[in-house]
Amino acid sequence: MNIFGVGLPEVTVILILALLIFGPKKLPELGKQLGKTLKSLKKASNEFQQEIDQVINESGKEDLPKSPRENFTNNLDQLTKESEQTDLSKSDNDK
Image (tube, rainbow, N blue to C red; front, side, top):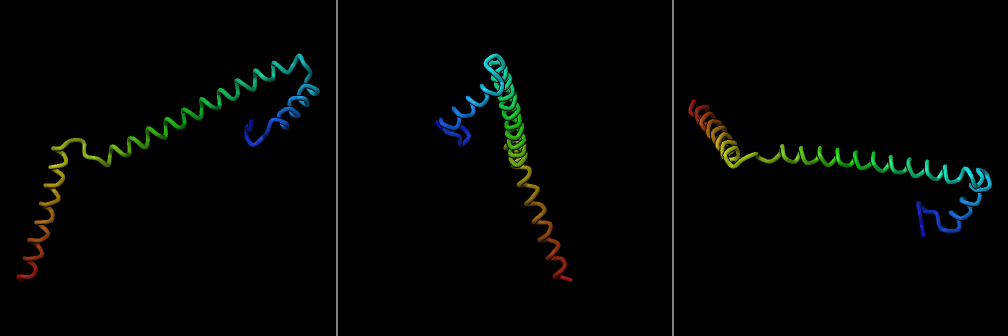
C-alpha cells in the first residue's frame, strides 16, 4: 500500500501520533473533516478538468468548417482570390 509516496509503516506511525495528540474522542471528527475536504478538492478538480475539456472542444470546433456548404464557399473564395492575384500580376507584367 503506497499512498502519496507513504507506505503502510509511515501511515501507522502517523495514525498513532494523531491518536496520542488529539485523543480517541476527537480523532473520528478530524477524519470526517479530512474526508469532506478531500471530497471538495476532488469536486473542484473535476470541475476544472471539465472546463478545460470544454474550452479545448470549442477551439477544435472553430477550426473545422460548420457545413460542407461553408467548406465549398471557403474554397471558392480562396480560388477567387488566387485568380485575382494572378490576373493582377499578369496586368503588371504587361505594362
